[in-house]
Image (cartoon, rainbow, N blue to C red):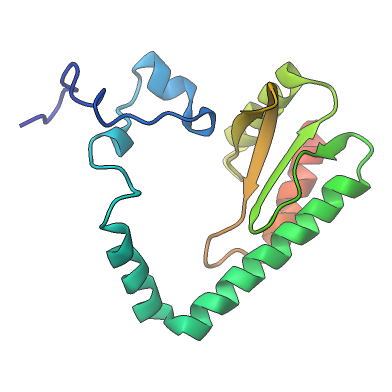
Length: 159
């Protein structure tokens, strides 16, 4: 058993670490990141997870939530476009908005950390074309427009 300690070399075989999953706590060894302790999410068992979601919400219910999340992401995108300080990095096709503050990479990382430290919203980042880009993903069942707007207000407050 591997309880209590992380075995050397075990998770190297399963590890996937795109930029948006990197964080200080994992890199410092402060926490164990269990995402690497299993077969990748892209394998067969993903269909069972989807089956449970469809079984719970029904096809129409799932469609409703997806459409609602995409609509909120489009509204968030519009707030970014209306801002003189932020820029949209790619057109969001679904519920993920990739944006950044025009000041630069260091500022964007500090902004992300400042927002995350409030505990009111949590962002990840990635690098696109060599630049740090913040990722706003809207996908929780109970998320409403007021939550997306409050998050945008928080981002502006911290920038």
